[in-house]
Length: 192
Image 1 (cartoon, rainbow, N blue to C red):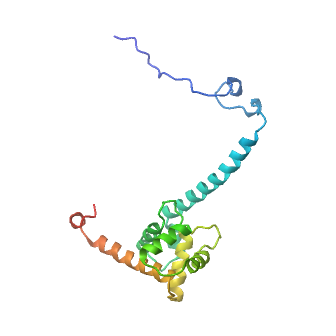
Image 2 (image 1 turned 180 degrees about the horizontal axis):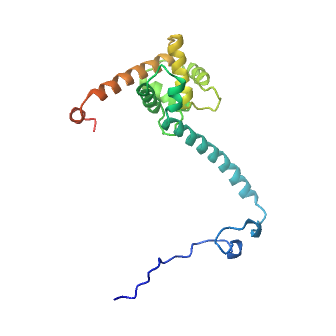
């Protein structure tokens, strides 16, 4: 019979703060903390990272919109859940870096790959029209609103709207065909 301890071994966490800044329960007591004057380097670093943190927050919100399709089902009643899922797939094909937002370089690259012949100025004009909140990026909600408005007005202009329409219709056709295939047919087609 060994004399092994019956309690978990706890390690002391590494910290650069004095133990006096913590209460007896281990929670930080902010009234005991003293702050040294902030240097110019710290100020500039903090300012830089505020922008980075804001961009990451926006990207996180955009990815959350992609995950929850329920609000879009309520807003666009004539679309089924599969229609919105297909449109999400199309949106994600434009979103190259996967942050849940389409910025202008991503849209420009995708349209070039689709063979769109519109000028960069025309693309920028369409991009700005889709980007309703002027955040310099298109989120999924703005994308859906644009597709919905194009379907309602049945406007087919040269360039961007035609390219997006062709991508969406092609993607929906492929998604429907994929759903009809069995798993073995998908394996034979090299999809997995």
